Length: 506
Ligand code: XMP
Image (cartoon, rainbow, N blue to C red; front, top):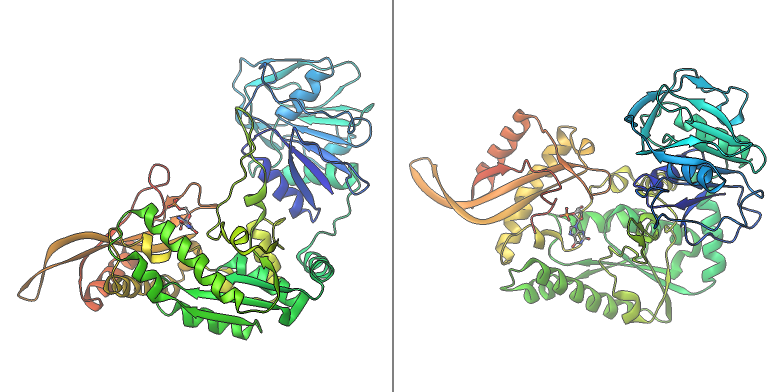
């Protein structure tokens, strides 16, 4: 495997994904925790960073066990750091070094640039530049403005490149990473979804033995894939619990239960609609809604899980981006992201936690799901928030409002599917606004609710842009909603991006 040391670059996860796309396993570690380097580690990549090597507080890794032992590839900050710490000179650059550039000189005999073409486009993004290389270091690539675009120190087997091979705009970036990972480090390209399923199932069998495991299914991709892996490993010893909180989409509870039964999973469906809606009566504040839903979920899940004799483990669909320790610009940070709806579960239940997907990125989870023949309907599902429609009904929640929003949402989502637009959208839904507006139907004046449609494009939900859905489509959906759903006389479309807006309205 390859170890990637993170210096806080926004592209670190992208480096990891590119390496994984070469079917080579890699792990991200913060620069201040260089992991133990056993025989399985074949090379080290140093990421970029928002810091400058010229800062007093610049991140400095301890590479004493790495240098001379394993090949190292420094990218951007990583390259500048290796140059400077070996006696080279790094200065603020006076010419612009952001964006596209072309490799005008390439040392074709150097393994890192094998099969990279003269003039190949690369992506630069740095304010510092390497002015002078240390003794013994050799320039292996240049652009018009950046003389030291790439270097090699044969002595310590260190490579540096000042551009970013991991971004899409570096056209032959994948080739350069392949050259490093496969040819220079000697990694074998055997990390594939099939290999992952096989080895994970084996590991789960050893780890869990004859123990019983309980898992909370949400209908989403991660929990479904986690369930299927455990099912393959321990069969009947896995019990899944799917809770109907009364805030799901129309027919979602029945549809999801049905598809899980087809997958052979042992699923207990719990109808807890009344508990959730009862506790939410009269509550308008979004954070209070979230807290109540989280608490009632834990209570409900706990009661059901206790009905299973001797359960020892709680399985969760945590994925890699949730567990990577983040390196912040202002020095090491120990915060670990915890975006879990069931964050409080393990403590409360006194169970050991098993997380079979915690090394995978989202796209890999989908590929693993595909490998296990989970239906594309489950794998391609839009994300849906844990608190469900509760945070899409602005203001207080009543069963009538839930039913009304379910109807409207159903028309929108089914419309996206039948028009072939569903898969082009990352997430879509409808908000029920706490305002009434005047309308006219036939000769009657109406005074009814307004709904807002939302459809966004995103990769991780952190940033998002609204989707430019065709006017004809919006027009048809608006008509359908107003004609079919009693209580709605006005439809609007949300054209805000995130930031500054958020995807959900609450
Ligand atoms: P925002 O509204 O913050 O949403 O732009 C980003 C993504 O997170 C989802 N979301 C939630 N998911 N519990 C969840 O499980 C929550 O409380 C929650 N709030 C927002 C949202 O649907 C979007 O995908």
